[in-house]
Image 1: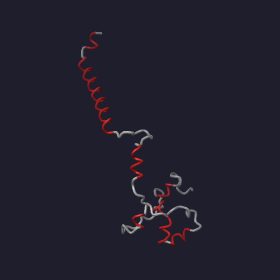
Image 2 (image 1 turned 180 degrees about the horizontal axis):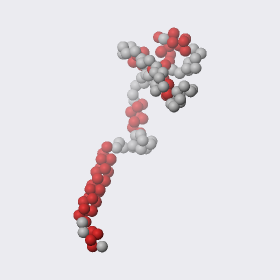
Image 3 (image 1 turned 90 degrees about the vertical axis):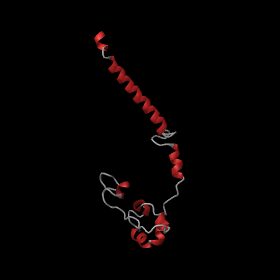
Image 4 (image 1 turned 60 degrees about the vertical axis):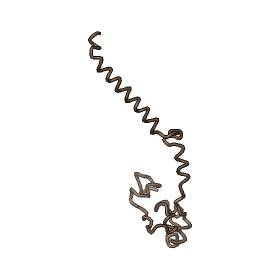
Length: 127
């Protein structure tokens, strides 16, 4: 039994490294993880308030229809008639208010595009 612990300095070093690593982890976690994190799953409650304070960036379907009545008419009676323009083209408040010269991105009808947000990801042809 005596020969079993004759190199105990290696065990002591390993224990010190393990305890030091654990202590470093606990300190870094206390410093870096925001308070309240985990209260709502993997979110912090303050993130909800941060998001609520951001201005709304969507223009709304009626604003799109005011400038693009031809598109509204072309979509009438189609299976996607009830879907708002910004569901595929993204938020368009800056475009609608004239704050940007950028045109909205065209709807991406590829299998990996915006369609998979609503349709089955493994079979985009199915609705």
